[in-house]
Image 1 (tube, rainbow, N blue to C red):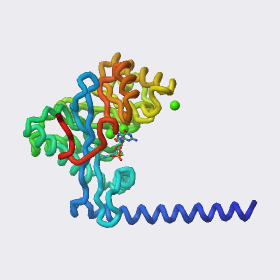
Image 2: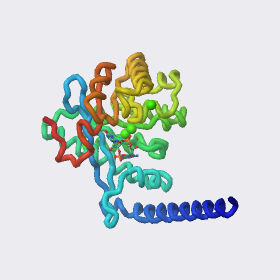
Image 3: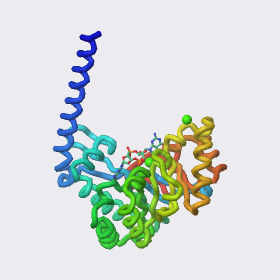
Image 4: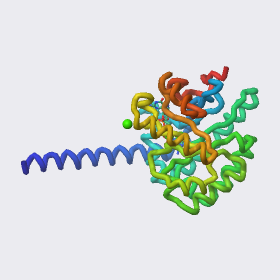
Length: 272
Ligand code: C2E
Ligand code: CA
Ligand code: CA
Ligand code: CA
């Protein structure tokens, strides 16, 4: 037992070392990725459940790596956060998403909002609000077309400073959503204090709808909570018609997921 334990241990440390080396390689490449213009945004439609129409999109970053091909954000966003690279990458995302939204509006497309994911280190910088204002000015996008998504964990961790920033963004007219709602734990009192417009029901609760009774109960409760606080709801990870039917019945306003469309290049979004 002793020797097999030691073997398991050495495999474990070896795996850790490989993982660490992989991170270092990615980090090195990530440092030059912006300059080399290797990032792009894909957009996923957000559908109004009543009308069945696309009313918004969420911008999702991809990294077109010269050797690895398309690298997904789960592989590199945490590295970008740890190294501070997220500040410049995040600003690029914001600018590119706003530029694209402006272009859609100029084409006569009735885009209600474009959602952009914002990471903790971005929002915690003292110049974040100024950056957002500047980008909106540069791209001529009206603030009420921009939606900023922050995760539940981020909002709950950072107490006062985050609340202050969210207030300033909200005062500018920007739409605010809590992403992955239900995965962290938010006190109701806290939620009430935040200038939030919308809760995004996490994919993990949507996945097994309508059959999973616990998930159905949680989804129903989140929608009721949102209603009572005057917030809107969007369900993410919607993959089939049965989920849509239940979400509609529960009074969820919007849905996003593979059922309506995978994240794709801007030209491929079908607005009709
Ligand atoms: P997220 O914000 O929760 O984004 C939703 C993720 O679910 C996306 O993965 C999307 O492609 C995927 N998805 C959408 N519909 C479905 C569905 O019906 N079924 C399933 N199984 N998955 C679905 P993606 O694009 O790989 O992004 C992963 C995460 O990376 C995002 O999760 C977000 O946290 C982060 N991320 C993406 N872009 C950015 C960005 O520009 N900035 C920051 N800070 N984070 C980003
Ligand atoms: Ca999101
Ligand atoms: Ca999410
Ligand atoms: Ca379950």
